[in-house]
Length: 365
Image 1 (tube, rainbow, N blue to C red):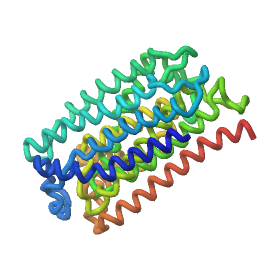
Image 2 (cartoon, rainbow, N blue to C red):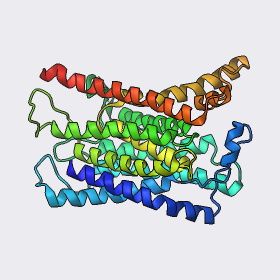
Image 3 (spheres, helix red, strand yellow):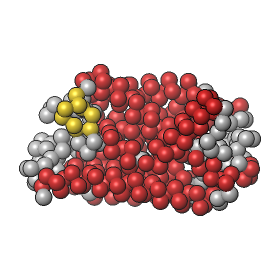
């Protein structure tokens, strides 16, 4: 746990003190966020606010991960099931964070260069996300450790693998890519109000830090509870990456809270979604993700409902989608929307962790 705490504090310090430097640098480069003319009128005042802030917390997370590993190597002895050098799990999780963030960075760069809010088209984003998801899905499924445990699983999972739902390696890679794409787009749609995606992602990542560390304490082959163990690869690595990302978002939120001095941009939103999707696969909690990320699901569904309704009936269900903008047009203040949506996210995280721990208690009593 020491390494997770150290990594979280390091990433927090890096973003808290490093983000102002990034703000100055991005302003000098005139990397300002273009604002849609059709959006709420209150957003026009945000025009020119530096974007691409995701670069800051992605870099901080990677640096904190390295520091966390140094702490592990110096403080804990290795065992056959607990090795503290860089792992395939770390490669997959950080790789998803960096490369889905890279897809978003290209989108942000095109928006700034073209001076409009269009950026990379939907097909381009989807192709980029698909390539990243499939590439790291293959790594997650085809590179087992000496105990024959892979990062991903050939089974669909809830709080652990569901033994009777076997989908094979190819099916698992497809599912892996789907989860990464769905999560990255869900977080991206949630972005748009100051601090909304940052705070929500922070809650979900905190849940995965708890889950990863709990699995580390009860990993099969090294668990004090023989009646219940988790067949998960490198669970401490999972907690380390998630904890480092939480710390980085805490520091970033200081500058991203209303009124935001910097936006995370698609580089941050797609990166966070890719990481969250990867964590769901690595912890074998795929079907738990829609509960933990309940806010992301609700906002994504609002967009789907709006598009289907408009294309089939010509009518809009909401004044504007995603859902947070509907409430802006209804008259809610931005701060009220963010806080209330954070509450919804917190409820989902609490329910999800409740399901996770209840399953453990049901077995060990």
